[in-house]
Image (cartoon, rainbow, N blue to C red; front, side):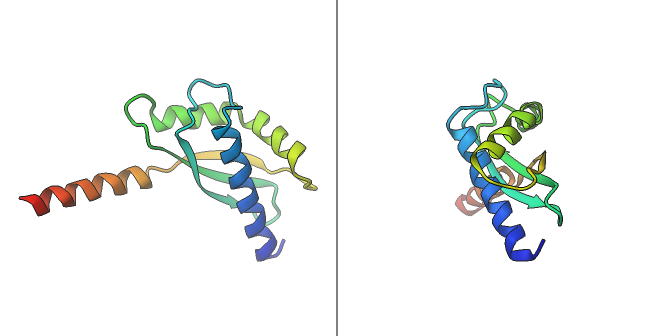
Length: 117
């Protein structure tokens, strides 16, 4: 698959998975609407896709639990993508925790604390 089609596939997957999460169609209690898809990386043949997710609500839900919930619902997510998007092959989804947003936010808060002192 050429690079342009691969990037379009990744963006399409990111949008579809984000929409499923935001609409609350994933009934697993570990997956809240505050879980966001940060990045998708598809394999060259489009058969597998790594999906990085982040969670901003660190008090009520851990990121690892959200990833476990998404892994548990991966078959349902794949079937919903297959219904809404015409693809020859729906990729097998693998979810990965992405703590980069939370780490960046914490670093910004630390820098703000240093500047005030």
